[in-house]
Amino acid sequence: MKRPAFLYIGGSGAQSASIRAISEQGIVSVLTDISPDAPARKDADRFEGISATDADSLMDLAGKLAEDYDLLGAYAGADHAYPAIGEIVDKLGLVQGPSMAYGKASDKVTAAEIWEKTGIRVPEMIWCGTREGLTPEGDPTFLENPDAAIVIKPSNMDYSRGVSMLSVPDRYSIRKALDGVFEHAEEAVIQKIAEGDLVNVDGLMVDGGYYPLTIIERHIHPNGRCQNFFGISPAPLAAATEHALHAQAAQAARALGLQNGLFTIDVIVNGTELTLLELSPHSTVNGDGFKAWLAYLQGDPDWRHKL
Image (cartoon, rainbow, N blue to C red; front, top):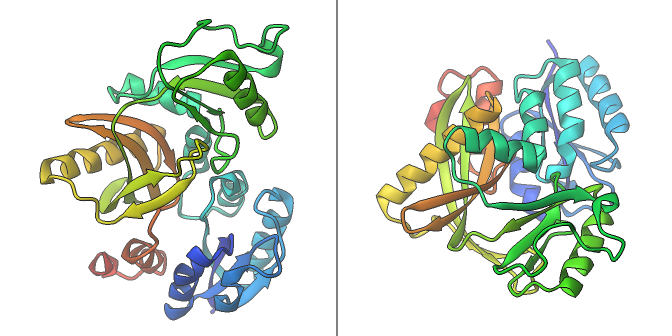
């Protein structure tokens, strides 16, 4: 009988607890990271120096792992690894995803259109286009003088790179922000910023069923680049708000076709009004939910007890 193994992409210090949890459950933890000095390397049973965006090398590694081990799954703490994970899921038939859901989640425009059709509130879209769609002066073809705060970001998931929040937008700041996006992506989106508090809602999907995990109140760095500054978990919210947030997480995941795996949604909370920003196929806090997911993949009938 082959030993179980699990592929973990990304070895930042924040991933150490999850990688230790893999080994503690008797699973061979295989970590990949582009840096040989990745902080979590010391916690893994095996390490491979591969970038999270090198889909071909990750696929080759996963194929070899599937030959030598019972490969249970693949996971990444960063959004930009999920094109590779989707390919691995498809080719090896892993019990997660499916990859179609990863693809829909990674395309912010497609995801927003799907959610809006199911009745979920999403930010107002002002413009979406490529560099070729700008005017000769470098301006997007939309309102000349935006009358509201806006966010400019890549249309695909890219770990918040190229994201700018402009509270008082003008032509210069918009052009500069778009240049930043086009350094990382081919297509940019401009949306009105929804007012309220930002939270992450972590959940676990198993065979289409939703299992609530935790809610984190997020605070963004004041540099305007949409970088996480700190978070409060559990978020100090009313029970009714928590219930509504988990209901929206389940609805958002099912709308994209996500059947199995950990995920998180970014939501703006303004009183009773919820505005869904995006869904990422990994959790913010890899605690009991991650352990329960590992137990499920091992066929443990009592996996729910770990939640």
